[in-house]
Structure formats: structure tokens, C-alpha cells
Image 1 (spheres, rainbow, N blue to C red):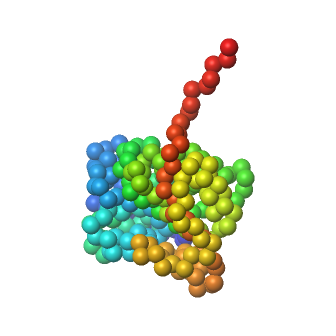
Image 2 (spheres, rainbow, N blue to C red):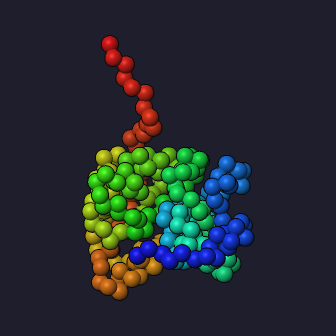
Image 3 (cartoon, rainbow, N blue to C red):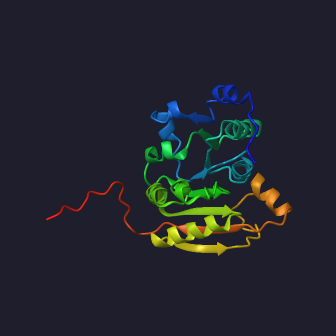
Length: 224
């Protein structure tokens, strides 16, 4: 369901720059400083922020960065951060594809993908958050034992993701098509809460980054 537009959203984001970063901030020292803490976690597609808020509350010594490109959702997340007086949770209001190359290498411990857009049409598969090009960036920004933790209700997206992680030698150390929600290092998003009420099965994987070399725009092999 598309989130209803909130007229207060942009003014709120602009008035709470202590927790919000957007496109003009990406090339600033303050943006880079977001990733300087050793235990930094990244959620891509934070929605209305229930997951990242709970994680921030439960793990005050870790830093959590929520990426959300929807204006209203980003503002709702920022409002929850402010209302809960969290100093370890931040929002980046931007499409992750527009700044992921700016994130320092080996700066993220875990990446969370919670109920990402499945982009079901084949011609849109490159936009998926587990497509080949972005998995390579995940490997770059994660620390040596870093992980991607994914939850989804979409089995086709889940299988697509499994295949891509395996193709690049990621170790899938947890895999379930009916996740019970009992991992102690997890939280529930608004989507997951609604799906569980409706009896929808939740798929989940935890993938540790692989050893294959990733090359962006490789140099073509010369012809003889």
C-alpha cells in the first residue's frame, strides 16, 4: 500500500538535521562521520521506522542508519527518532543507489533488508536490492565478517536473492521460508507485524559476504 503524502514531512526533515541527511549532505565530512563508529548497521528501505527504532532502543551502544527514499516514510522515521530521544539512530532520505559508492569500504557490520520492493517484472530485476550490482557494493562496504540480513514475504524475490548470494560465494548461514521471529538480534517492522496477523509466512536469510572479487565497469578484454 502506498503511503499517504504528509504535508509536514519535508519541513520536519529540514528542521531536524541532527538526525537527517539528504542529497546535499552526501559529500560533506558530517556524512562520512556517520560511518566512523565501529558497530554501524544499515537498514535499506526503512519504511516508517519501527524496525530501526526498536533496534536502536535495544542496542544503545551501536549505531543504526535508516535509508528511506519515500519522503513521508523518512519523516515518520525521523519523528520517531526525535520522540524517543535516540542519539544512535539516523535517517538518510535518499535512494541508496545514489550514494552507496560514497560509503567507506569496510564500514558497515550488518545490512538489513526488510520487505523490500520485489520489482516483479523481469525488466525491473536490476532495481532489486539483491541484484548483482548492489551485492557487489554490499561486499565492499561490509566488514570482513559482515552480513546481509533479509526478510520478505515474496518467495520469488527470496529465491532470486538466494541464487545471487550463492553465485558470488556468500555463505548463507541461516535460511528459512517460515521464520518464527525468535532471533534475539532482530526487531519487527510494521509490514512484518501485519503479515503475521494475516498468517503470511515470512522468509528470512542471513548471508555472510563472499570472497569473489567484484569489478565495477570491468576493462574489456582486448581482441587480438
